[in-house]
Image (tube, rainbow, N blue to C red):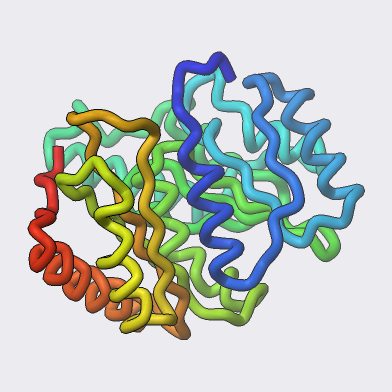
Length: 257
């Protein structure tokens, strides 16, 4: 890591794990070097972690090294995985038909995304071309996710749900962020308190980094439920009540930028 990209994925995954009843023990940011990634994975395996997430390094370029590092850490070889290959080929056919890429032919670089550690399985990526990968080592599951936040979240809230429910048994976690035209958290507090009382199963948190006339507060609404649909309903209802309550106080929701 060169500090060029803000790490929002770790924060999101921590919220997901805690929201489903899990406990986060370790977060690491390492350089894009196979041995460094593998060494940190070995340490987590030695500690007996039940679930390890890796984020990024799943693409077609030479600096995408995550799966090679997982293979090295688990003493396995990389091999072309039939299910992953079918997914990558299908995704590039779709991209080509939409004009996103110039052609659907498979190159070594594209096939690189379908070379998984022996025994691993792929999960479909609803947004991008690189599948997620689950590698099981004894009682540990290593889940390798693409680094693009939209892809990572689509996988976590879609194909990965069955594994998360199996591990945590707490259903699904969802969140929604609102931005409001207000720079004073003390003005937000009464509305947040009222909505929190109406929806005790939903967590609300306001955030701002500083004071100033140009500051807009962000409000995070999150919930865990037996299903994704139920969690979505809970936060949507709470968001509607919050919008109305804030409006009564003269505080409007800011447009998305």
